[in-house]
Image 1 (tube, rainbow, N blue to C red):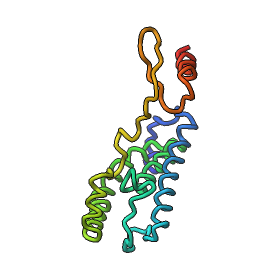
Image 2: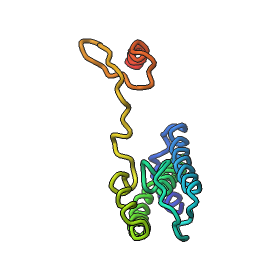
Image 3: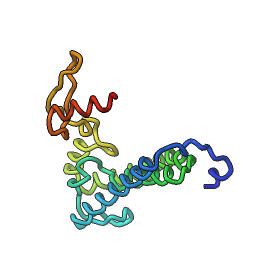
Image 4: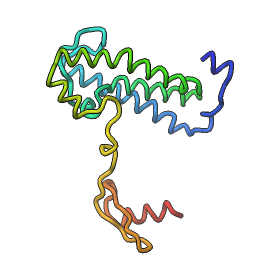
Length: 171
């Protein structure tokens, strides 16, 4: 905050309030989901206490570190809400430090404790962010417009509805 007071960058003041709040809420939701999954399995959430179970369900199906990813996203949200440019800048070295000082050590510990089960988990679940293919919406149909096929994604009830949405967005 001292950097923000001494030399404000002023880059974040023009972002919409909804985007600012959504980032913080997304981070909090991910942290909460990770905490719930660990609590359901009866393992310690506090990283300073021993792990009693390998959690691979819930949000842990998409990322091996939902609590760290969630707190990073939530901190970005706080920086956006209060237009703290320097907090966003300093999150990058903080995440690098977290990776090398905490996450890598935890991974060695979990591999020693859970062996092949943990190695199999590592092979199928990314460390931080879900693979891009998990974020893509499935195409459920196509609409013809100006001689081109436009994909219709899951969520649109009908091709006609998707076409109306597309036309409305172009106008």
